[in-house]
Image 1 (cartoon, one colour):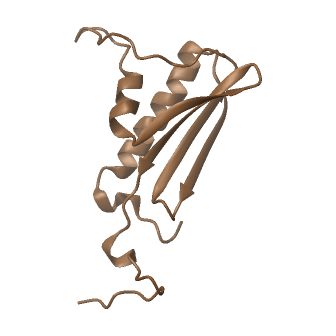
Image 2 (cartoon, one colour):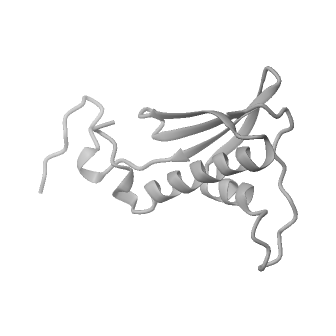
Length: 121
């Protein structure tokens, strides 16, 4: 993880926190609460995978766009807009909802194919 600097883009950390919060909130609101949270960095693909497991078997579904004064109903739309992909996997009697975010490498962390760091200017 020391080679990763998600804040290099400025919004990557905020996006990851928001997606994680929305996924945990959805599990709490619609599935009796989260059972597990799993975060995995994949440096080769430059992605962060967020997975929340709950006990409800029903997959999440996109709702109609709520009115501006409605306090709920935007979570899955937020997840859909901020991630490169998301989906569900059945797990026993429940499910795992997962989402992947692209995370940029900081300019000073980019390495060439042979592993040498580019010279600093």
